[in-house]
Length: 159
Figure (cartoon, rainbow, N blue to C red):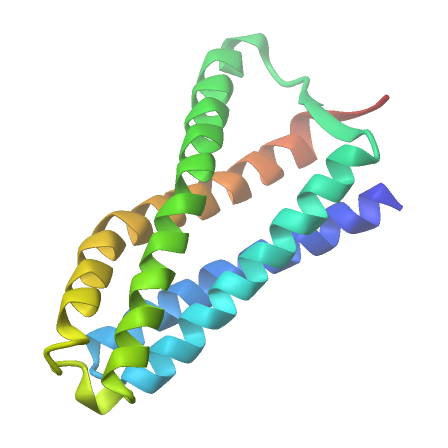
Protein backbone atom coordinates (compact mmCIF):
# COMPACT_ATOMS: atom_id res chain seq x y z
CA UNK A 1 0.00 0.00 0.00
CA UNK A 2 2.80 2.43 0.87
CA UNK A 3 4.39 1.96 -2.57
CA UNK A 4 1.10 2.96 -4.22
CA UNK A 5 0.83 5.98 -1.93
CA UNK A 6 4.38 6.89 -2.91
CA UNK A 7 3.52 6.76 -6.62
CA UNK A 8 0.47 8.99 -6.11
CA UNK A 9 2.56 11.42 -4.07
CA UNK A 10 4.98 11.71 -6.98
CA UNK A 11 2.13 12.29 -9.42
CA UNK A 12 0.70 15.02 -7.18
CA UNK A 13 3.99 16.90 -6.85
CA UNK A 14 4.71 16.69 -10.58
CA UNK A 15 1.25 18.09 -11.33
CA UNK A 16 1.79 20.75 -8.66
CA UNK A 17 5.03 21.83 -10.34
CA UNK A 18 3.29 22.02 -13.71
CA UNK A 19 0.46 24.08 -12.20
CA UNK A 20 3.02 26.37 -10.53
CA UNK A 21 4.83 27.02 -13.82
CA UNK A 22 1.49 27.56 -15.54
CA UNK A 23 0.48 30.06 -12.86
CA UNK A 24 3.73 31.99 -13.30
CA UNK A 25 3.14 32.07 -17.05
CA UNK A 26 -0.41 33.34 -16.57
CA UNK A 27 0.58 36.20 -14.26
CA UNK A 28 3.40 37.23 -16.59
CA UNK A 29 0.90 37.40 -19.45
CA UNK A 30 -1.59 39.41 -17.37
CA UNK A 31 -4.21 36.70 -16.91
CA UNK A 32 -4.93 37.14 -13.21
CA UNK A 33 -7.96 34.86 -12.90
CA UNK A 34 -6.15 31.97 -14.60
CA UNK A 35 -3.09 32.73 -12.46
CA UNK A 36 -5.17 32.49 -9.29
CA UNK A 37 -6.76 29.22 -10.39
CA UNK A 38 -3.41 27.69 -11.35
CA UNK A 39 -1.78 28.72 -8.09
CA UNK A 40 -4.68 27.40 -6.00
CA UNK A 41 -4.44 24.16 -7.97
CA UNK A 42 -0.67 24.01 -7.37
CA UNK A 43 -1.20 24.63 -3.66
CA UNK A 44 -3.95 22.01 -3.38
CA UNK A 45 -1.86 19.41 -5.21
CA UNK A 46 1.17 20.19 -3.04
CA UNK A 47 -1.01 19.77 0.06
CA UNK A 48 -2.25 16.38 -1.19
CA UNK A 49 1.37 15.44 -1.88
CA UNK A 50 2.37 16.38 1.67
CA UNK A 51 -0.45 14.33 3.18
CA UNK A 52 0.47 11.32 1.03
CA UNK A 53 4.18 11.71 1.77
CA UNK A 54 3.61 11.90 5.52
CA UNK A 55 1.23 8.94 5.33
CA UNK A 56 3.87 6.93 3.50
CA UNK A 57 6.44 7.80 6.15
CA UNK A 58 3.93 6.96 8.87
CA UNK A 59 3.52 3.52 7.31
CA UNK A 60 7.28 3.06 7.66
CA UNK A 61 8.06 3.05 3.94
CA UNK A 62 11.36 4.67 3.07
CA UNK A 63 14.06 4.28 0.45
CA UNK A 64 17.73 4.66 1.21
CA UNK A 65 20.51 5.51 -1.23
CA UNK A 66 22.53 2.45 -2.27
CA UNK A 67 24.30 3.96 -5.26
CA UNK A 68 27.99 4.42 -5.90
CA UNK A 69 29.82 5.52 -2.73
CA UNK A 70 31.52 8.35 -4.64
CA UNK A 71 28.07 9.87 -5.33
CA UNK A 72 26.91 9.72 -1.72
CA UNK A 73 28.18 13.21 -0.71
CA UNK A 74 26.48 14.84 -3.72
CA UNK A 75 23.27 12.90 -3.09
CA UNK A 76 23.18 13.93 0.57
CA UNK A 77 23.96 17.57 -0.27
CA UNK A 78 21.01 17.54 -2.67
CA UNK A 79 18.78 15.75 -0.14
CA UNK A 80 19.67 18.09 2.75
CA UNK A 81 19.11 21.23 0.68
CA UNK A 82 15.81 19.75 -0.54
CA UNK A 83 14.60 19.00 3.00
CA UNK A 84 15.58 22.41 4.40
CA UNK A 85 14.00 24.35 1.55
CA UNK A 86 10.89 22.12 1.53
CA UNK A 87 10.36 22.96 5.19
CA UNK A 88 10.93 26.67 4.48
CA UNK A 89 8.56 26.60 1.51
CA UNK A 90 5.50 25.81 3.62
CA UNK A 91 5.46 29.12 5.54
CA UNK A 92 6.62 31.03 2.43
CA UNK A 93 3.67 29.70 0.43
CA UNK A 94 1.20 30.22 3.28
CA UNK A 95 2.20 33.87 3.71
CA UNK A 96 2.00 34.46 -0.05
CA UNK A 97 -1.46 32.89 -0.20
CA UNK A 98 -2.60 34.80 2.88
CA UNK A 99 -1.58 38.13 1.36
CA UNK A 100 -3.23 37.31 -1.97
CA UNK A 101 -6.42 36.25 -0.19
CA UNK A 102 -6.55 39.41 1.92
CA UNK A 103 -5.80 41.57 -1.10
CA UNK A 104 -8.58 39.90 -3.07
CA UNK A 105 -11.05 40.34 -0.19
CA UNK A 106 -10.28 44.06 -0.05
CA UNK A 107 -10.25 44.50 -3.83
CA UNK A 108 -13.52 42.68 -4.38
CA UNK A 109 -12.23 41.26 -7.68
CA UNK A 110 -8.99 40.90 -9.58
CA UNK A 111 -9.70 43.92 -11.76
CA UNK A 112 -9.46 46.16 -8.70
CA UNK A 113 -6.11 45.15 -7.21
CA UNK A 114 -4.87 48.74 -7.19
CA UNK A 115 -7.55 49.70 -4.63
CA UNK A 116 -5.91 51.46 -1.66
CA UNK A 117 -7.13 48.83 0.81
CA UNK A 118 -5.92 45.95 -1.38
CA UNK A 119 -2.63 47.29 -2.73
CA UNK A 120 -0.50 46.70 0.40
CA UNK A 121 -1.52 43.03 0.46
CA UNK A 122 -0.82 42.50 -3.24
CA UNK A 123 2.52 44.27 -2.88
CA UNK A 124 3.44 41.95 0.00
CA UNK A 125 2.19 38.99 -2.05
CA UNK A 126 4.53 39.99 -4.91
CA UNK A 127 7.44 40.43 -2.50
CA UNK A 128 6.90 37.00 -0.93
CA UNK A 129 6.49 35.13 -4.22
CA UNK A 130 9.84 36.44 -5.44
CA UNK A 131 11.28 34.01 -2.88
CA UNK A 132 8.52 31.41 -2.76
CA UNK A 133 8.39 30.49 -6.46
CA UNK A 134 12.14 29.79 -6.90
CA UNK A 135 12.23 27.83 -3.63
CA UNK A 136 9.11 25.87 -4.62
CA UNK A 137 10.57 25.09 -8.05
CA UNK A 138 13.90 24.03 -6.53
CA UNK A 139 12.13 21.76 -4.06
CA UNK A 140 9.96 20.26 -6.81
CA UNK A 141 12.85 19.62 -9.22
CA UNK A 142 15.20 18.25 -6.56
CA UNK A 143 12.37 16.05 -5.30
CA UNK A 144 11.95 14.61 -8.80
CA UNK A 145 15.71 14.08 -9.07
CA UNK A 146 15.80 12.32 -5.69
CA UNK A 147 12.87 10.15 -6.74
CA UNK A 148 14.65 9.16 -9.97
CA UNK A 149 17.97 8.52 -8.20
CA UNK A 150 16.28 6.34 -5.58
CA UNK A 151 14.36 4.56 -8.32
CA UNK A 152 17.69 3.47 -9.78
CA UNK A 153 19.88 3.36 -6.66
CA UNK A 154 17.50 3.00 -3.77
CA UNK A 155 16.48 0.20 -1.49
CA UNK A 156 13.16 0.10 0.33
CA UNK A 157 13.44 -0.19 4.08
CA UNK A 158 10.40 -0.74 6.25
CA UNK A 159 10.20 -0.31 9.96
